[in-house]
Length: 298
Length: 318
Image 1: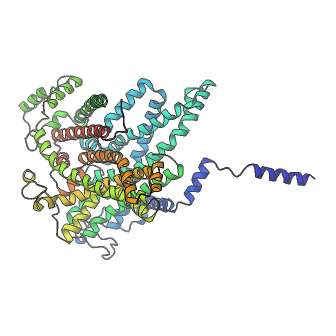
Image 2 (image 1 turned 180 degrees about the vertical axis):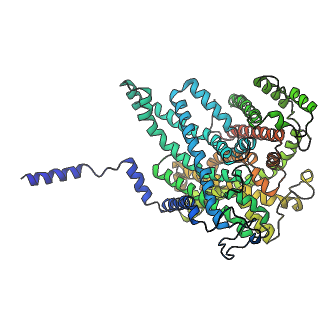
Image 3 (image 1 turned 90 degrees about the vertical axis):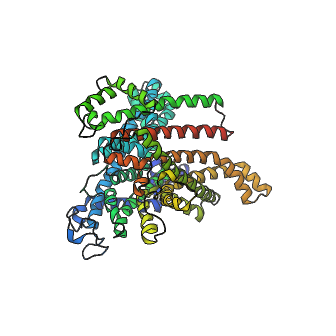
C-alpha cells in the first residue's frame, strides 16, 4: 500500500511541476548550444594560456637582438615566423606580446567597472543632487571621443604602461557609470525595494540584496564588450609610442616599429596586427554571445 | 520645437565649459613645472619671467583658468613651441584636412552599410544576414591602424597603384577632391577610416529596419500585395532618422579620433598634428588641438540632435 502511495505521490509531483530551471542554469543551457561563442571562448582561453606560459613556450629570448638576422622571412632557419628589424625572433615576441595586450584589455576595464559601477549605483540610488553632480561630471568626459581622451591623458602624462592604463580607465568610467546608474534608477522605483524599506531594511542591505543583483548583469555585459575596445585602444596607444615602452614586446608597439620595414618583409610586418585582430574579435563575439544568453538589452 | 532647440543649445554651454576645464587641467597634469613644458629647454630667464606673467602662474589656479579661458575665447591658444606659429592657425588649417577624410569615410560607410544593413534585415536569419552580421563584427574588431598598413602593403607596395603616405606635392592648400592626382592620396585613409563606422552603421540599420518590418502595418502592406521593394521603401523611411543619428555621431568620433589613421598615412590633419605635438612635447599645440577637437565633437553632437528633431516628425520634444 505504502509503495503505491509513494509512487502516486511521486507521479503527482512530476505532473504538477515540470522541471524548472533557474536563471543561471538556463543561461548555461543557452550557451551550450551556441557553438560560435564556445569556440571563441576557447580561443580566449588559449591566448591567456599562451601569455601565461610564454617564458616556457618561446623558442628564443624576445629581447635578444642580432644584427646578422635582421628582417628574415617567415620560416627562415629556426625563426618560424621570421625576425624583426633588430633581428629578434617574431614568434617569441608575439607569444610574449600577448601579456601586455591582455593586461591593457583587462585591467582598465576591471578598474573602470569597479569605480564607474560604484559611482553609478550611488548616483542612481541616492538621486537628487548627488545624481546631478556625478552624472553631469560624466557628461563632460562623454564630450570627448574615446580615442581623443585616451591620447590626451596619456599624451600629457607621458608614455608607459601605467599611464596608458590610467588613461584607458578614465575613458571607460563614464559609460560604465551611465549603465550602472540607469539600471539602478530602474530598480529603485520597483515595488520590492519599497517593500524592503517598509519592512525596515537598511539602505546598505537594500543595495546589497535588491539592487546589486539587478545591476551587475547589465554592467558586466557592457564591461565585457569594452574589453575588445580596450585592447584596440591600448595597442593603439603603444602604436603611437604612448603605451608600452620598448624593448618590451607588445603587439601595438611591434606594429609601429615594423612599419618602416613593410617594403622588405610585408608579411612579417602584418603579423602583430593579426594577433590583435584575433584577440579583439574573440572578446567581441564572446561578449555578444553572453549578452544573448543572459538576455540583457544593450 | 524651437523651445527644445534653445534649451539644447543652452545645455551644451556647461558641457563646453567642463571640456575647457579638463583641457586646462591637462597642462597641470603634465609632469614637472608647467612653465618647463610651455618653454623650449634653452629659454632665457627673461622669457621665463615674461611667460609666468603672461600665463599668470603667480595667481591661484581658478584665476589662472579664467585668464586662460578669456584668452582662449578670443582665439588665443598660445604659440606652438616647434613652429612658433599661433596654435589656432595650426589647428584650423589641419582641421579641414581631417574633415576631408572623415566626411569621405562616413559617406562611404553610410552608403554601403545602409544597403547591406537593409538587406540583412529583410533576410533576417538567412545567410545574407549572417554574412552582414559577421562583417560588422569584423569591422569593429579590426585594429584600423593595422588595416591601414595592410592596405599600404597591397595597394602601394605590391600593386603600386596608390600612394602610400602624404597628401601630394601640392599640400593641403591646393587639395581638391575633384582632381584624381590629389584625391588618390585620400583613398587609402578614407577606406581605412570607413571600416569602424561601416560595422556600427550596419548593425544599427539592420536592427532599425528589422524593428520596423516587425510592425503590423508591414503585414498590411504585404496583404495589399506590395512587392519587396515597396515594402522596404516604407521600412527605410521609418528607420532612416535613427541611422542618420548614429552616422552623425560616428562623424564626430572620426574627426576626434583621427590620430591613428593620420599617423599611418602622414595625412596632415589634426590627428597627425597631435602625434607630432606628443613626440616633440609641444604642450600648447597638444592642448589647443585637444580643445578644438573636443569642441568640434560637442558641436557635431548638438547639430545631430537638432537635425534629428527637425527631420523626424515623430519626436515632439517640449
